[in-house]
Image (cartoon, rainbow, N blue to C red):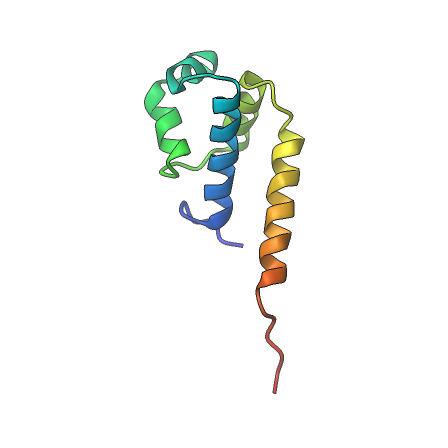
Length: 92
């Protein structure tokens, strides 16, 4: 699994968190204030320019009142779907 800033998993995580922020009808500035960060922090991770550490991830989930287990479940489900779509290599 890639740890790259631009990995599919990181991009998916950013999309999930952005979707939940929008569902809560919060602007980036509002979320930033809730987690005591600046708006550019939110912009950077939502655009995939920054990875989140576990503390940042949990703070965002708390601020959005969104269960972090649901995010992880969605990521695992998506990742499993991607793995099923990838042809496996067998020796000739």
